[in-house]
Image (cartoon, rainbow, N blue to C red; front, side, top):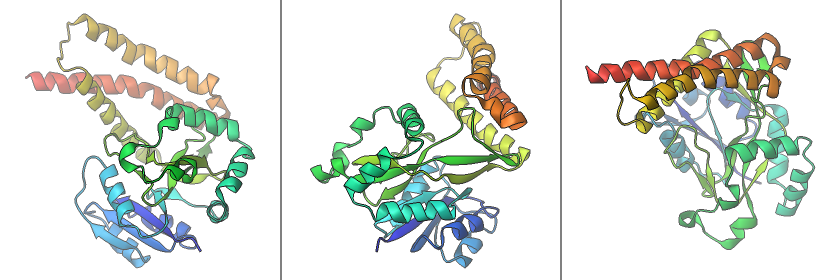
Length: 306
């Protein structure tokens, strides 16, 4: 029987940790939590639910603690989740079924996925070089090239009381199920994917992501993404000169062009309007994050000049 470990990295997730662990209890054989010295009841709640908790620091690159949790697992397979994600009974059963399949059976299963084309299109966007997935430093055996060692899981994002199914938000595929020792996080960028030795497949049943159950939580998350954009701008633009022509062009692009293109692309091209008012709100705030990021970048840069 396949041994499955649950790996979680947490920081102040008292509101989420219990529901996440409980949703996985019938599926996994061990629970590993790497906690970044939470100041709430995260550690106590995780321990109460049977997790082995490793308390450490809370690095700005959160993937460092995710990788620590993966490394601490002893299972053949690792289910790496965020605390605000939930496994449904249907997804749990699918995981059991797929892990019991041979490689050829998984190939057949992949070809029969109802949303195969949608998944492939998403994968091409987020993992364009997947044919180069076998880094030399982690290559153990040539047979790994033909073996399934990781699986994307589509996510349904819960937003203000409902799920977003359009607007380019779904399938929001994330690599969450990996064979131990065959995938790792480079820990270089917050948006990075797992690097996988071997083949990456898809599961059909979605993971529930309690992304933004309230508007307050959404604004908090949105603000963190804006901070990442600001950091990217500061890295790219070493010299800040408000009178520079390049600055003027970039200002127009980030404050006007990007927001307009993003808003209408999400609503019309990706049919976000099908999600009703939630789709409109999500598209609007997704669009204006560029203008907010550039404004924040200018303010911080001006402060640095003082």
